[in-house]
Length: 256
Image (cartoon, rainbow, N blue to C red; front, top):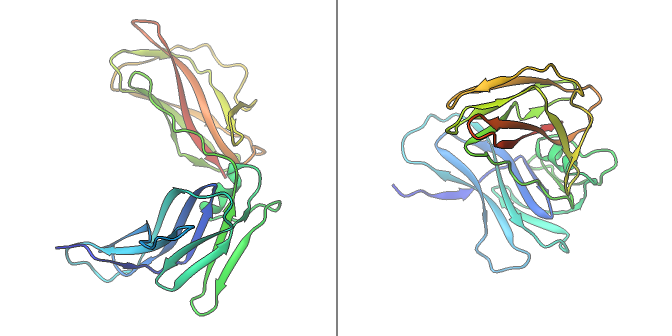
């Protein structure tokens, strides 16, 4: 059965840039639909986008389900608006500055509000009880972390509140046993580079941990109540037992 798509209802659309991240929230009439954001076919500058719902083959109960979809695109920095079409019409909202740090727009994309020092542009439709919020940041997102020789550092959860806690796990998918201590550092993304913080303890018990291939070992980390909002990563060195090769592992998480 061929998949058919139509414009989807949306509750909110959020946009951050200059590498534009469009996030749309709304409702689908049943689990038998997938939502997605697509470039419209019109040959126009700047380009238009649309939120679609696409039917899936099969029979599904008529139960309304919420959705959230996103699309990351390159978008001209000299443009002041982004146009997104949906089942209720279209939103053409002025893009305003949203603070100096990437965390400001991260909070908006996650459903929060723009910070006090940021400018916010809002469009509202009384007929559909809908609104659009658009922010722009000139910071870039950090590159994703990669495993080293099959060994990775994983953070759980990846979003933490100030004063909360997380666990980082040395996940050994490599061929050698790895060893390491309790020492770690925490770095914060400033929009351009990772900057070391003083959040991690300066003194840790001298304990040697051993993780064979196929195993993982979690380590708890407590965050202070006054930690800044933003993107962070835990940095932790481990050594391959047979070769003594040092692997620098990183796990990103967000405080909001």
